[in-house]
Length: 114
Image (cartoon, rainbow, N blue to C red; front, side, top):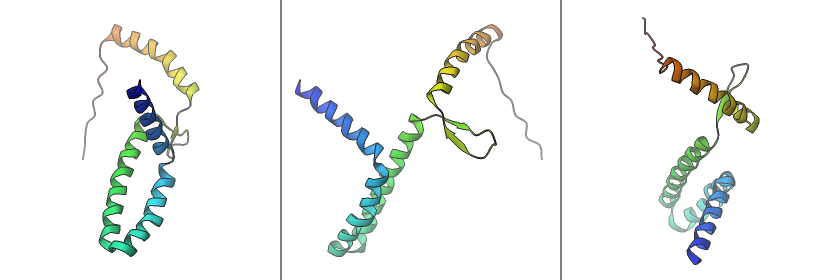
């Protein structure tokens, strides 16, 4: 039972870290980095910034895989897809799967001209 509690606590901590990552990152880059620089020098601040940057890339990758983005109607950028839209895709997905199974695989070919 203790393993499941530890696992649940780890999942909750990871979810909170991802949810509040922007605040945590700002705190690490400002307050903690300033204290490290005063005590250990500029090199320690650089190493901390490098570690935070790597963690930021990981969190950004997690966020991009968790959310689905769709292109805006005016074509200027992307926005997060709402649950209603996801449900609409689930309904349309069955029709698409049926059509693909009848017609065969969909092949998209692009040509390059100079």
